[in-house]
Image 1 (cartoon, rainbow, N blue to C red):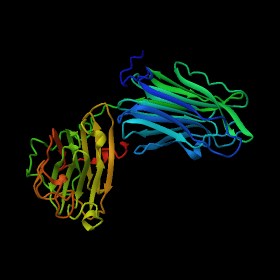
Image 2 (tube, helix red, strand yellow):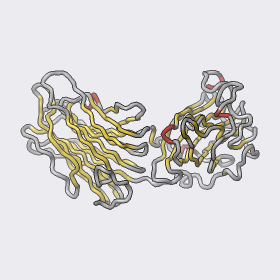
Image 3 (tube, rainbow, N blue to C red):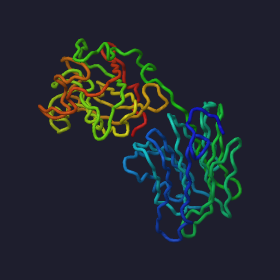
Image 4 (cartoon, rainbow, N blue to C red):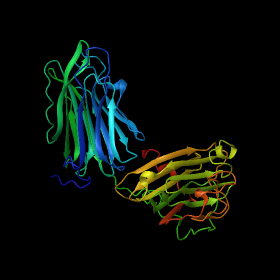
Length: 436
């Protein structure tokens, strides 16, 4: 069994991944479309999914998820006319998705005029490097380390009987097969293969076949484990912690400062009841920042203007940047939560990292919001603190009270806060972390 450490072992493969393949029916002779699907089960919120596809019209129809609450976005697509076949014969189409919920995920395409689909689940933190190549071209990725996992998805069309492409040198075959793709008088036999390699280093390359009846494309993927401390790597020691920034404390000056807040905690939830209350506040109802939780399920935060009803479309709400998300999948799990406010861009972003700061899990952007720019300072001059509600920016409604603005009922293990003079430039806290 491979001993590669960066990825958890799967019950389905000893490569540290789950893999599933699906082939649609033979190519249509008419114009009707069928639906091809491929599914994986026993998935967790921390896994990363890559969907591969090959066949006619994939470039038009695409690969989609049919599960509610799953964000799917394209990494890379390769498309080429093959041996006189229609230009809509797509060799490789690859998507990625971040799963928001546990259980099963199904990817599908309505372009099933003879298609092959592959699906891969990868455990733990990751980073993805991708290169795709049309027929006769070479996909190549450098800076590959021995801890990386290298994946190759290949698809080929033929003018006669199909056979799967040969396994690239040094790679291990996971799955392969043949299928027919096209429509009407343009039906071509085709094949696909998925393979992997570990303990590679330096530059990994693979060239798509283009000789004889073979014509194909290749998608090369390098999966890297991510172990990164998003705080210390960019911002150093915080200006305040939960010990130096006590409940209803003073001394935190206001101004047009960027701010970054980190919260370490396990949000407890059981039998319909969960932790709730004010996590942290700075400023007050006229100009302020507040961050709260309702019943271990819903999280809200608000910066810049703190008055009026939360998201009621009024003047105060428009002048505020806010976030409002369901956090059910993170209940009863130790996490580090991050809020960053960019005072020059008037934006607020909410992130989470399962396992806490510097864990093997990727940091994920949950939501972002931008104010109308009438306020440059994210918080005002009132008292600041954590866990105790006192003149906080409104998270409920004008003059209202409620879970978000009550005293916190759970345990806030650690709060870290960066701001003040020489405030960090939070644009370095990336806008492109894994969006869910």
